[in-house]
Length: 214
Image (cartoon, rainbow, N blue to C red; front, side, top):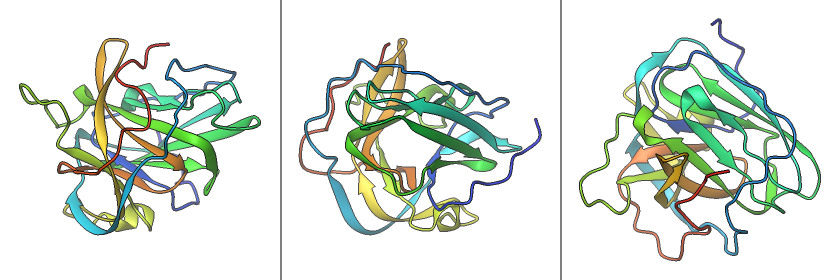
């Protein structure tokens, strides 16, 4: 598949997943089964440098997916990337067209639009673990991975895959359709990455895991 132009925004999410060959568009209300979120995601502020989790094969081109999220919820997704974004009921007050761009390269970078959108309650960003180079260890309850904010988008990831993050977010394991995901939460569209290292953030995770099933 030929690549698409990069979205003109600084909003990026970086994950490690296997090569992607297709993208999709899903519209209409898809109500997630996640319980309504009652708390805000705790972020650890301050510059951090961590390695971005890698995909097994480089993505040759960009992929786009567009979804209409309603006040009942929605699940923007790029299945071939293993990306699932869960909006619970009430996250938006009116219909919102969300576009996700999976950027090319070895580091998986996702851009989200509309840039700067803030939500009424946190949303979940989930990455399918089996499509990453990270393997869950025996007896491991939390992944040695955390979400991170890329202030300048993919420009904050250097040629060696080292990311510069201005905020970090706790991650957890969750399941969807009997598959294991690494999940973190946000209440706005900004640049995010899945990076190596266990984040010891205080506070409860802002939604109930592990069931993402529809």
